[in-house]
Image (tube, rainbow, N blue to C red):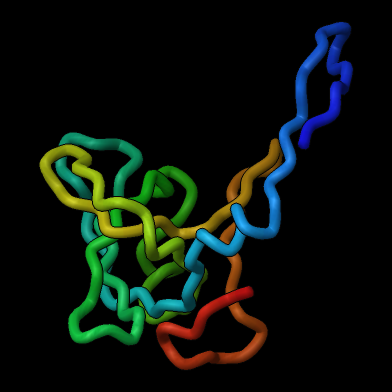
Length: 122
């Protein structure tokens, strides 16, 4: 399903996701256990994240220029957990932190109260 919209005198097609498409995405709450810098990369952090699994996951994120390590450490955030692993700068990333950005900068999202690591968001 799609609709045509006009943006700055250009036609663009807006594509809608179905509920089945959305259901494929697994988003879980996790706690950041450690934050490391990827040497030679200005934007990347290596996050060790407790997602309620047997061992923490390694997740790389390009948020270094916006967020200090202490703003991540021991805090909970939503993570996409069923992405295929991806190699970045020689490190495997096993998920993605969710964030938003606009002209004012980057925003990270925290649960309004602590949740058990691994709690699925829906």
